[in-house]
Image (cartoon, rainbow, N blue to C red):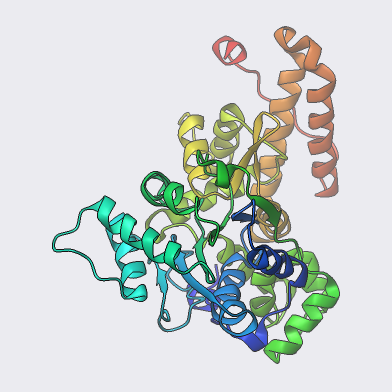
Length: 408
């Protein structure tokens, strides 16, 4: 595994930002409307899509230099790891970045806004008085625009989001000159305020090969890997480009890319959770049963694994999503692990493919699963082909399941 110091990325710099003109223009056009019906923007994207840099670009460049009459605040509500500080050595005015293990309270949140607006409060104000003081200030500056950016919101403490929505956002968003921009990945927060439910929504997409070339040029980097190799490994997600350009070969690139992915997991549980992802990366999707089967095969243990606990822990990372009745890994995670893991441990990769083959073969033979037989046969065949590609042309006989396993 690569040293974690290698996974630190450069802080945001305006001259290194690769333009996302379409997305930025949508936001600027919204702010220029005199009576906007929509006052919230929700931006999603997988790990590495550049959401934090986009938030910083809006805060430090667009709202400060390219559009007038805007007062904005940036709250990054979740830390992407001990080595990732896109804001630089310290946050600038009207910014607050939460560090790993730190929790932001609603009072701290309101105090930063009140201080930045230089609002005078009565002695010992309560929560309602603080919110009302901000509302009155915004309401009295009708020719100005006020923008709150909540970066990494979905990954953050949802109790804080509930407090913000209940006591602050629901109140301020009724004003036509107050706006909210939310970024996040994974399971979206279930907003209740109509303005947030009806928000403009878009995702930050992957970079093209040409945009990666532009990114390398702006960072002043030449790479041992070709631009196409960087694209294949990082799938066009901008977070990976800088680090992949610094490696000597593809094997090191995959190692670094995997470390970047899992830097979002707290250090004390990173190794364990990463093993879950490595164990399940051969599958396109999984449930609790598959999680238990694959992790047990990965560990080569007789101990029965707790599939529910495994799925819960993986879901907490926001690197998986619930789709089509199953968990699916985010695209960059699965892409990188499927390239990386066979190089890291080919024997384990083969063992996992065999475990998947046997599991789905057994599912296909279950009488209770009769109507799903073609589906499970197709999955078993897929893993048989993966085994053949790895040099195992004829999978060994699968172990017979005990009666209680067949019924579970």
